[in-house]
Length: 335
Ligand SMILES: [Zn+2]
Ligand SMILES: [Zn+2]
Image (cartoon, rainbow, N blue to C red; front, side, top):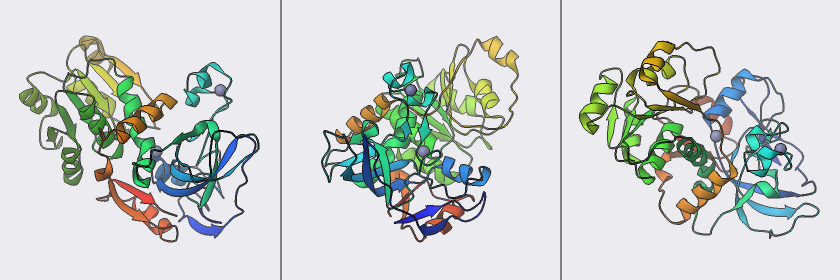
């Protein structure tokens, strides 16, 4: 089968023929119908030198073969793939928090992912998609579940106005869910104009350019209060401090942005305001279920997040281009 594989860190992916995977006991063989390109794929391909790695964890596919012992699935069923595989026995796995399993492996990192014609997935990690959902919606389940988990971990009533820092794919998904979950106002900050426009299209009631406007006062003017619920979706040094600076006293800051370097904060700001912070990563299986239900009921309209598609042959160039400043939000591979 054709797959786009990592050659070396930072190099173009290379499209090559690799053996078609075989489903192990308990697994499904999935024909990939759509796979989103994630910022983490771009980052991983630059920092980890894993020759032969097939990236891609935002997978929508179709069941084309059943591994030994699999029941309850039929050929042709369409699925969204929960991309983490755990031991299925520990406390974390039993509540669907697979990312906290000591044996967790991720598709597109420790296991081959979705930048290929086929992949394999534990049957227990496959979420059936209703017919009403198209393949793009299926591929968006994973990034939307990230946002759902972030808000699920944000212990504030959602009728509070919400401040979302960053209008990239994660921030836009948080804005979309925030709007759906009933936030009175959804304010998104981003220095890039097209990201602010996209945020408005997914439900932001105000967008702010933090390079030209004071975020706290723009928020207060619009919402009659300083931000009591802040979700940081950028993940570069300085953003947690920024979130603390703009937050109201007693606010809750949820950190979703993945910063992998040392960052500095001034704890006194948090102390003075008695802020609470929650760091979140991934999702639980319940977030996938909630996302699929909301999509199926038409409560989430996420297609505006998709700004492009690519076939597998054009993927390496498209993938590389996404590492530069771009007007794209979510680009989807259709292998
Ligand atoms: Zn992702
Ligand atoms: Zn486990």
